[in-house]
Image (cartoon, rainbow, N blue to C red):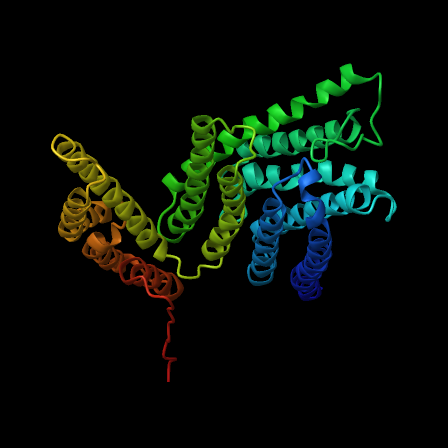
Length: 412
């Protein structure tokens, strides 16, 4: 009986994610067809950055593929189901918007139910935002909460998502995503109590920093594989945050906070692509593909960023000094600055890389300590399985191989 239940569970863990992924791919094809048809009317739309829905749909596919792979290979890990829950609604949202755009603007009245489909796309986008911002962070990387006390935060995030979705579903007036379409299910005259539903946004937003704190606590209590997995997600999240901050600063500096300029649209598309990047990070981490490469990626990224910043300061200093004697656009100023940067790049990069490695790639420096610790634990180790697991952990942490296998000779 127990074996039958296990087989049934494994079948669900393999078939259902594949079915959901197939649905996501079919919906993506429908989205692509409508997106192409709507290109001719993009100038008429408030939803004017036509690359954003394209990138958002691609990000949804990334999460869908990652979710299907995780659920099939790690059936007990809820992160895979959450990834599917992020990817599929994201695709549904963009497809619904394109459908509504087509039947209300491109070919008005050509397809039925444009306002209803727009209504669906207007509220379903809350699901991927809530799942990615809170639920995934709480369950990452092993699919379990850090402790029981975090269940309240998980429930609060779900309640917040439900409240936000009800608000979008029932609030009268124009839809947020496509503001030329009135909410077909809005309830005029009930604005006061519907406004209370908007508190769901604040409740959901309040759970985001709490979930981040949970991940921080998990990182402090973990080691080895779990820490590397968290670093993958944290690196992607920090990069996305920098992109959004950069977009905001650029918008304020150029006076294009409302969007509209080509540079602003490009930054918006880049920021949207960050969601797909986070999906890739989840896949690499949970499936443990080149897991320990994250330390190398972080150290190289940080070191090159610091080198570029330092050399940029040097160039500005040289230009300021030469400006006293020569025009800033003089060929001699450009030539001297280029030669100085070329001469300084190698030694500056070498020294910066060494400093950064000590902070972000410590395994290169801690190999001896890890080996000594493992050797000391052998005195009290009698379980062969735990011995092999410890040995695998030591080799993974010190050598960081792409693949690792253990062959144990059987007793003759």
